Every structure is written in structure tokens, then in C-alpha cells.
Picture 1 (cartoon, rainbow, N blue to C red):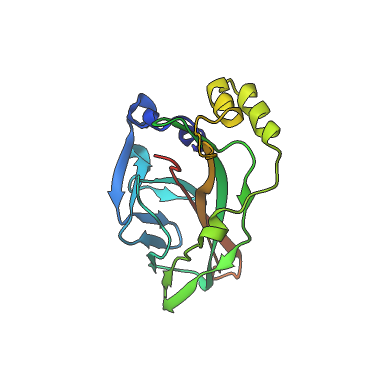
Picture 2 (picture 1 turned 90 degrees about the vertical axis):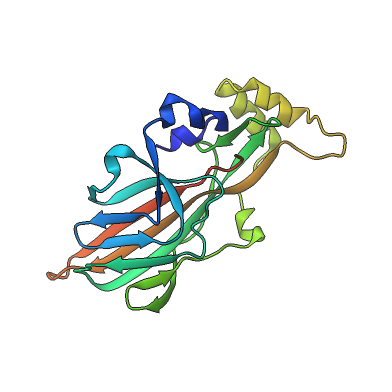
Length: 206
């Protein structure tokens, strides 16, 4: 699913996105519990609305939405020793005035998993990130980025990286959050460890 977000933002109106539906305060049903993310809007494939997920779920955040700091509720839980952890990922986005390209298949920074705050039983607050955290990224040479863009036939964007149009020294690319993930673990009645993961892909430059 991540490949859909890797192209220019104008593709949101194309047939690739035609089957996505906006859902407010999504409720994600697993066999062992229901997970609710309050007061956010996601884009989800029509066939996934109301289904019971087995393990990993990939979702899109709607434009302008954030999962940082939201209240997460778990209901109908049959697991014990429940833990929720959060992780973020950064990627590079390149802007060409209006259109832009999110490089979701190139280099990334991926944080460690971190436990999130427990408000009360089965209620959690998602972590928020600082500008410093959102700008973390592996070291690379600019020529590596240019070569990669040529490799994936995005020469227009390669030229923007190599020859910026701005006279003030600004560049066309930036580092930003591209994914926030949640890992939910607990033990069933037989003490088997159960793990579920929910990934929110973030449109970076729209």
C-alpha cells in the first residue's frame, strides 16, 4: 500500500485512490480486542471497513490529520499484560511547486519502539514528536539522492535537487514524518504472546 503514497500528490484524485473512504474516529476490530483512535480521519479501502483484522493493518491519514497526541481506547479485550508501543519513520519529500514526490522506497530513519502513556485502564495517549525528532535521517550524499531519482525515472526531480530554482539558497527537498506505527502486545489465556500492529502512512507534502 505504501507505493500509492510514493507518487505525486495529485494522484489522490486518480483511480488508485477511488476505492478509499474517509472514516472519522476509526474503530479497528481484531479477534482479541477493538482499537479506537479518537478524533482523527483516516482513508481506508472500502473492503476493509468493518472487517476483523488478523495482525498488521496499513492505513492512510487524511490530509492535515495527525495521530500524535490522540486518545486510543481498547475495548472488548481478552488479553492480559497489555502494552502499546509507538514508532515513527521519516522519509524525504521533494517539491516541484505544486506537485511533489515522497520517497517512501528509499532511505528512512526508523525510531525505536517506545511505550505510550496509560491514562487509565485500556486508554492511552499517543506520543507526540519534536521538530528535532521529525528531522532525523541517515547520513547520505546528495549525489546518492540524485542517482536514485534518475534510477526511478524521476529526472525532473533529480534536476530540482541538483539545480535548485531558489535564489535564497533554499532546497526543494525536506525530511519529514512518513509513518507512525503502533504495536499492541499481550498474553492470551494460555499465556501465548499476541502481537498486532497498526501503521499510519502520512502524506508528506500535500
